[in-house]
Image (cartoon, rainbow, N blue to C red; front, side, top):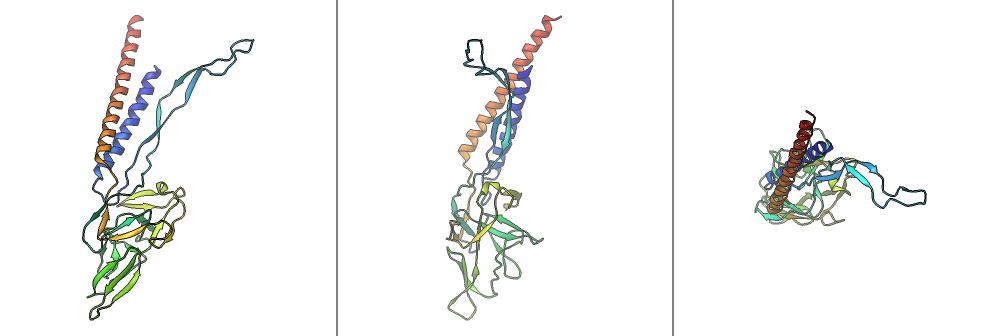
Length: 262
């Protein structure tokens, strides 16, 4: 019976939907996390009676048809790159982006990845690095015994050297933007890498070309809304249950038909 297969595709789709929602909820406290959304499309139809066909020699046209759908399929789980709420931390190396840009990170193999997570640290050489020790690009080294580290909205990094009262600009943090942020590939550790779908990375100074500015002493929270995720979870659960009832009903109908043949 066709309904068994159709309902099974619905259950599979809602199972994946729940998986996406559960990942969003699990990352509610992940810095810079961008929530995902499952998107679906209907499958091919069997046109038992095609609408618009001629029904008589006089030219009558069938006003409606008979189309039997094959179910549903998942077509994507895009990320919604909306701005997350900024939360003050007071740490001098915590930096939040207020805009569309990404921090550019150099990996150990020399390649680059991109992140919205600005919870940076300082390594033994004084360089600004991620929690995994990867260097933020362009590399900036903080001199020993310096004080008063400041990072302004335009990304200029300044410190006051030992024995001096005048701040010195050490370097400039840059941001990177993509024409299609949803086309970036998530690789874990709050990192993304470019793909043919994301477009070529475009480096720019904070506050220029729409990449956004920087907020020192803040971190961007995940753009996950608990109430929305829970309501989506309930809807997915009910949809799963209804598809299960369809399978039960189809099984009962097949059982009744089988009993008639005995």
